Image (cartoon, rainbow, N blue to C red; front, side, top):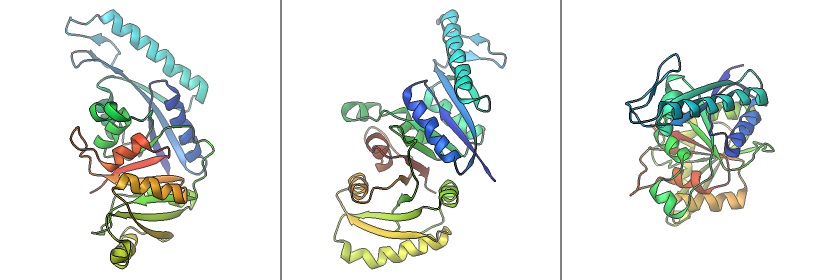
Length: 277
């Protein structure tokens, strides 16, 4: 059986534990290789060599950084005590989101799993969440969740997409989940106008998309709503999906926030975000 390399960035909070419990749920049907990563957030002027020695430009107290490093190393060691010696633990210094994205890429991870506290209002506009930022930057799929999903059953998987131009997308992870759990895949497009006017065209596009992406067991859904975020929320209220997959172009920011990032911050469902081609 193929092994899924999974990265769990951890700040040792309960959200990180939620991420681990989600991975254990996937592990029921998929072989996993679990890697925990803690990033000690420090300025670029602080570095750590291969032997673990801390170097700074002189303006920052080396002893303080070394103390924080020791604390983090003890906490990572404790994860091995809690979860077993089979897990892998890593410590990096740097900017949190960049370090996570770079490590996931260089270590050839298949999935990044992150718990999030979400973000609303001014906090969302100014800073958002680390999970949102990783989803924006990472070319590797990110599974985000806000609460304990250890009791999750994966029977209904929702794929939110604009099917106007059907193409083969990078859905490797989704296919692994489909193969392992055999859920019904629900294809959803949210439109702003009258559904009846576009229903036939979109359903044909969905069928073409399914053919191009080797999807066999699926249902088609089209709903009208004011935007993608509200459409997904309202569809889920009516149909109670177990997990949501949605693509992103990675173009969020202060003046623009993608529907994917809004859902990561607001929706209490596991969400897999992946970069569109």
